[in-house]
Every structure is written in structure tokens, then in C-alpha cells.
Length: 161
Image (cartoon, rainbow, N blue to C red; front, side, top):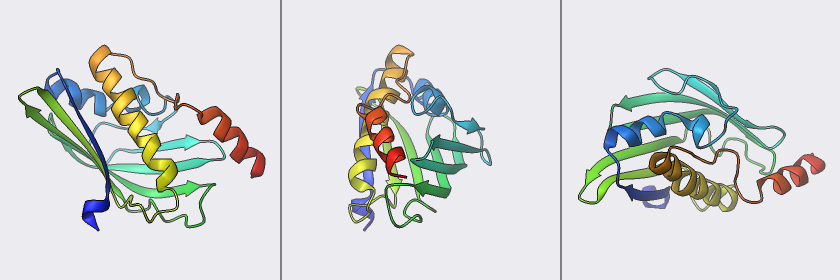
């Protein structure tokens, strides 16, 4: 089952330190409304799209310029039946220096194709990691809260709730 965990990666012409700093700032690439600490082991933060998705995440591993691991401790999604799908999932950001620059590999351990949210969650992560986070690393400006179609999808789900 491990090889089915959702993963994406990219390489950028930046140092591991630059990639690491960007990963630690999810407000700049995932959601500007994140509440809580996002930089050191033991920090917890809340991610929320009101009426649609809410998660509490704890940083369990922070290795400067190499790795960041998040643990999802609470999760609620209005569009799935099993509210435990993300609970206890680990989200890994592995940073590796390579010949072409620095590779960032993102893996959500536990987000697998059998999950009800997989068809919505995997494209969202692909966008936020390979577009928004990559832009933040490369240009200094990410695209938090700007997933294409997000506003329409939120309005539809909130209307049904």
C-alpha cells in the first residue's frame, strides 16, 4: 500500500535552505488563513476552508534544509463520509540537493486511491505543491487559496451543507 501514497515532486534551481524556508511558510503557498505555528517540532496549526475542510496539523519532524513532516491529528471534510480518512496521515516534504538544483518530494502517507477524497485531494495537492509552492520558491510569490475552481466548489458544497 505504501507505493500508492500520493506523491509529487519537482526540482528547482534554488538551494535546499531556500526550499526549506518556503515549506515552513504554508501561509504563503497553501492558505493565508492558517492559524498557529508552522516552523518547529511540536508546533500545531489549523487549516480551514469554512464549511468544506478543516484540519489540525502538528509538526513532528523538522530537519533544516532536508525534511519537514506534518501529522494530521484532526480532520473534517464536508464532501466525504469517512471523517477519519486523513487522521494520522503523515505529510512529508523531503528536500534533496541534486545536479539540477534542489528536489522537493511531497508525500501524504495514507492518501491513497481508495480514499473517497483522493479525486479531489490529489489534484489540489498537485496544484498547491507543484504550482504555488514552486512559484514561492522560484519567484518569492506563491498562490495560496487560489486553486482553480475552488470558489465555485466551495459555494456548491456550502449550499448543500
